[in-house]
Image (cartoon, rainbow, N blue to C red):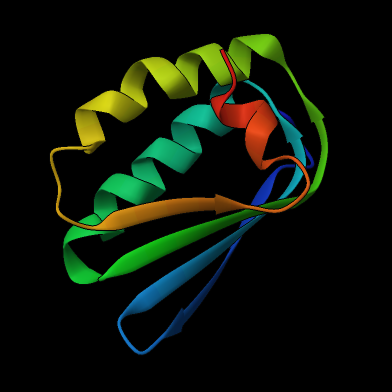
Length: 91
């Protein structure tokens, strides 16, 4: 796992904001997926801020995209924001 990867959480009015910092690799992707799965049912919307990510490794992106589709059965909206948002969900 990227030793500098962190997920900072902030909850307001039924919404959860996750700020990702550091490098995003395969282990980081799994950590984000686990955090999402644990919080989707208890929030109306989850925003994931990617602005503080340094490096997004292609393997991390693959792992995240492969497993993220399984989480989309929840009714909670998930939004990616920040300058690196497109890189995580890009083909």
